[in-house]
Amino acid sequence: MHFQKARHYTREEIHEVLGGGTEEYLPTKDGRVVCGAFRPDANPDAPMIILPGFGSKIERTAQLFAEQNTAVPVFLKRTVNQWQYVGEFRVSRLSKDPAEIARQEKRANRQGTVSMVLFLERAS
Image (cartoon, rainbow, N blue to C red; front, side, top):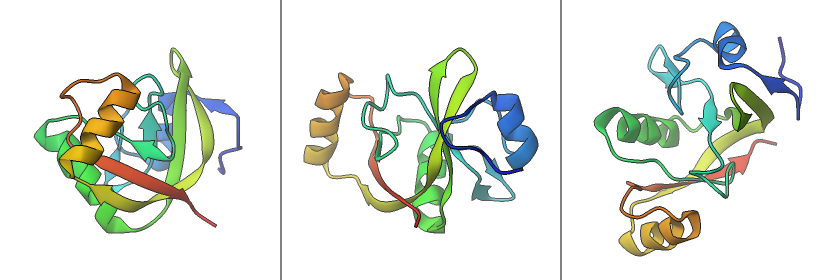
């Protein structure tokens, strides 16, 4: 099954196709990130800029996504369990620069909750 752009899916439907968890923002399967599921309230510039929080699993999967260098389907939360497919994206750059993090936190109205910044690019 291929996801259709602009169509909404439930996390269960996404899981059935790709595997991985239904709660994580970067679900993984067999040691690889299989998709991105981002909340625009926490990531106002998603899907182009993603702001991972703190926590070993959160930070580890963000690092994994940056290192795997392959595009994955990306979904943005639109309402309760309605995730809109917006295309295939890969990480073009990961920044842990404190000034960059501070700038992005300010844009997102988040204070001290961002561990790094992932810059994504659309797959051709």
